[in-house]
Amino acid sequence: MSEIYPPAEDSYLMFETLKKEIPILIEKNPDLKFIEVGCGSGVNIKAAKKAGIKIDNIIGCDINNESINHCRNLGFKVILSDLFKNIKGKFDLIIFNPPYLPLDKNEPKSSRIATTGGRKGNEIIIKFLKQARNFLTRGGKIFLITSSLSPNINFNKLGYKAREIANKKMFFEKLSLWECLKI
Image (cartoon, rainbow, N blue to C red; front, side):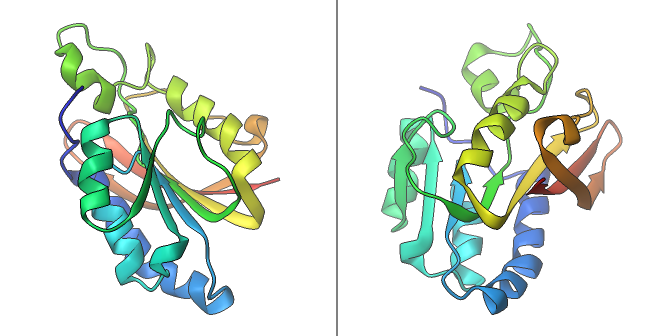
């Protein structure tokens, strides 16, 4: 399998948002249930714990066995799963820093699993959003990262009300962090 996706600008955009948003969510729901789809290096499940979510309420999942083993060694419950395939239960906060780039045939196949979101770049995100609604509690939220290098997502068509809550502009793209609520 591939190496663990190292934290980069997108990971830190999510990290900073979690530090601000989780304490507000915990005030409303001290028993907040949290899952990170594609937990990678574990930087954001660690942020969730540090921000106050009970460790027993934190789950991570990934399709990379190296990520699973790494995050388990950090003390978290982590499940081998392609998106929600092996996940049970409902969550108040679902986060996903997906592979969001369009297919680049020059990129090594070993790194594509962490970066390529499909031919256009948004196919995995659309698949995730279609599945995620079945795992979101009433009033629950999704935090999701997208890139300007991939086509825009029609959140309404997928049954979500979404708003950009953070972004990071770089010389070649804009990363956006979306808060999504079921309609």
